[in-house]
Image 1 (spheres, rainbow, N blue to C red):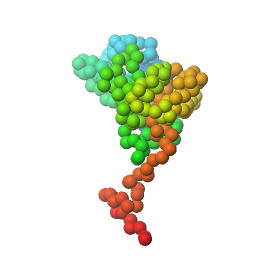
Image 2: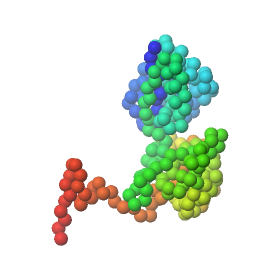
Image 3: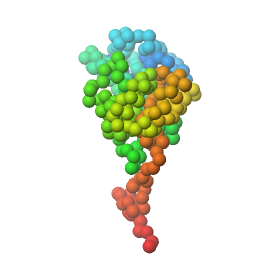
Image 4: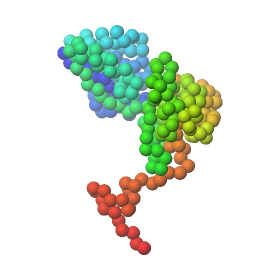
Length: 256
């Protein structure tokens, strides 16, 4: 028997894969991957193993592939886009494998919201603006607890990041405004962050719906709501301030 490796391969750009993930794919006997969300150059790293497209399989079929091959001692990789811990449905697989005596190892990857921030050239936490990031999704077939409704989360006025929600952009905007965000609040939508066909749409809660519809974006996009996407003002970091002392540097005296 051997562990099953749940591996994040990054958001799209093949060069954003970790060294550890790359080595596992190259050595894998079996790779079960997340459909079209995995770039072809990354799949091409698997030269000796079997490839199985999880998009064409149901939960039980995926589990059977992972279990039977791990039981034979093969190196099995369940390959996820981005990072497997964010909307990756790995908990159910890990638990089921454990019940059958198979261990699991999770290998983190660069997730899409980080690639989106990089594409925007922005900082998701800014002194004087917000020190909090909330990652969530709009409610559709997957229900969201009442305490996590967008209108409730919006009350914090933090940086709100939405996965799997661009198709519900109108509802997202309505709920964000209901929670207290102004219509002038900046919003950025990044379609296929880090891929060659990446699209960036910037606007406000007042106009982002029309802008997204004009670009015909209905899936595979990150939505970021908050002033950090287009800050009018912010404070400088205290860490590098000449008056700030810490364990590696003493404050510098200023001349009068």
